[in-house]
Length: 266
Image 1 (cartoon, helix red, strand yellow):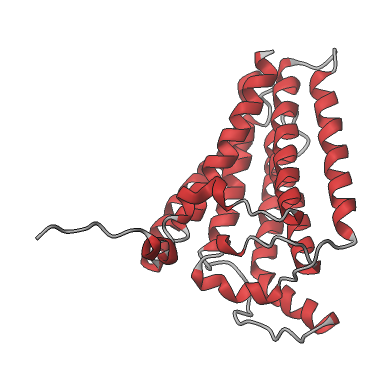
Image 2 (spheres, rainbow, N blue to C red):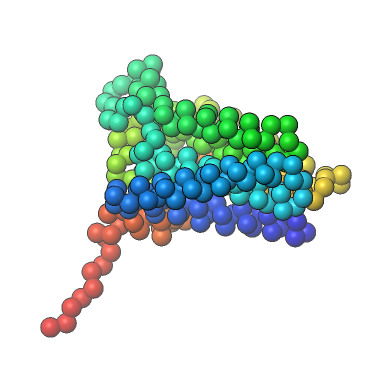
C-alpha cells in the first residue's frame, strides 16, 4: 500500500507547502521579486533538464522525480504571474458595468503574456519528452494547466468564493475581472470532468497490470487532480480557504499591520 499512500501524502504536503510558499514570497516587498524569480528560474532550468534526462526512465524513481520536475515548471509559471512579471499588456481595473465581449477582451489582455508563457512552457516540455515512456512530468504540468484554466474561467463567469486575499497588492486590479455569483453554468461540468479524470487515474494506478512506475505516477496525478477539485469546491462554499495558508498570507502588509504589537513596560 506504500506505493499508493506515500505518493498521495507527498502530493498533499507538496501542494499545501508550495502554495503557501509562493503566496508568502509574492507578498514580500517588490524589491525581493528579482531574487525570487532568479531562484525560480534556476529551479526551472534544472527541472527542464531533469525532464529530458528522465524521459526514458520508467523506474519508480523516474515517476517521483518526473512529478517533482513538472511541479517546479508550474511553480515558475505561478511565481512569474503573482510577482507581476509575466501578466499581460493591460494592468488596470475595468468598470463593473463592462459586460460581454469587451469584458472578455479586457480579461484576455490582462493575462495575455501569462497564457503565452504557459503555452511556450508546455511546448518545451512536450518537446523534451516527445514519445518517451516517462510522461509523468508532462502530464503533471498539463494537469496543473487544465485545472488552473478551469479555475480562471469559473472565477471570470462567477462563483461565490473568489479568494481575493490570495492576490498580492500589485495585482489587486484583477479583482475587477472577477464575478461573484452562487454558481455558473460551467462549474458543474468542471467538477464532473475533474471527478472523471481523478477516477480514471486512480483506476489506472490500481490496475493489476500496472507497473510500479505507473502505480506511483498515476497515484501522484490522481491526488493532484483531487486537490484541484478541492480548490474548485471551495469556490462555491460560504467559507474561504484562507485558513489553510494563513502562514503564507503573513507576508502581506495587511496581515503585518493586524498583528498585535508587543507591549512595552516603563
